[in-house]
Length: 231
Image 1 (spheres, rainbow, N blue to C red):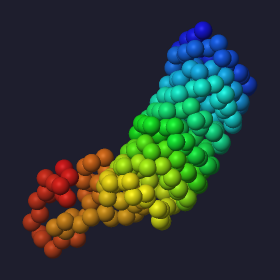
Image 2 (tube, helix red, strand yellow; image 1 turned 90 degrees about the horizontal axis):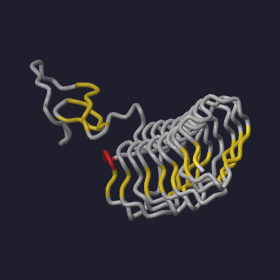
Image 3 (cartoon, rainbow, N blue to C red; image 1 turned 90 degrees about the vertical axis):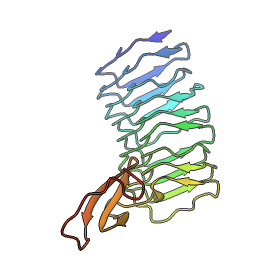
């Protein structure tokens, strides 16, 4: 069985169980269903693109089927405060939980890949435990303004650009498996001035230098084509 694209878009449904017989669905199936509060998914279908985005009243989402993937923007801007990522999940798509109301999060070892910005802007998120060894993606927890506790028990080899930008993290134990840290400082605060070269203060965002100030003593200035090797 299949649920078609936008089948329950902006519906008034409050509680629903997706049975095991459902094998797949199109995108946006419950998008903007402002009354939806509780979902139980017994199916093994991929949680679809934009499937529950904008469901601001959504408080619980229980997965009992062997779901292996959460697609892009699936839970974007939802009211989810708690979500247990089951050990069957292997991939979490870009922007999957952006803007959700999550408070704590554990990512299991089963996860082998994330899209960018997967948990960006979860402003109530305070604690994260990462058991996965997947590389931490760009902007993965960017703008999680209350995030103050991070535990990484997995063995990732890289941390992407701005992965923890605009968080409350002052310190974290980075496993020795990590050999590459994007921008050199994933825990930078919004007010940090990252580098200075020939009088130009700049920070690196998405691999590009962004000039934020100048304190040099030259009156005739040419803006350089690169700063710190970044365009």
